[in-house]
Image (tube, rainbow, N blue to C red):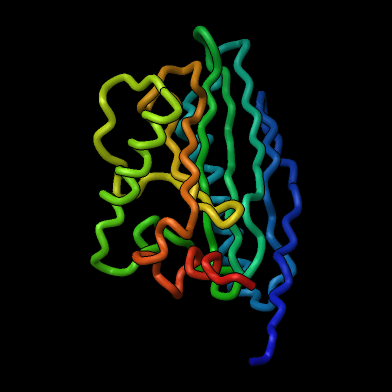
Length: 205
């Protein structure tokens, strides 16, 4: 079998500033397909705009906004990253929003959680059971007994794990920050879509 090395995407930081706000936005290059590059960068920019919009008004004289990002996976034609937006808009403390994006750098496709699994597999129940077990094992204080993730629960891929997470205040008090639940791809092998990004992480090469 011929070995095909897929070079990682190049991810650079672009500074975008407007009154009371400074955002560091990821810009992707170094891909073989210009169409893929454009699709990925358009999706990132759209997500950044949505986060700015979701934070609301910066009219408070003390208001400020900072945007930044973290690359989680950049290998095997999979790019998974999180973009963050912190804003203080008045009140007791600021709020950080996080949105994660996982792409196929060969095609530019953006993946939803359901795309990672075989069609018809009950991934919601499987992941919910694993999250519930971690909540118990890690003694995480939740507002009410944990029932289920959403079918479109936010996630990213890192270190051959699927990381499911929740927004601030979604299931836990503010002091917990973002509750993250890493789940090894090997625990999900039987329901992983072999053609999706987790399928590529499940191969020992």
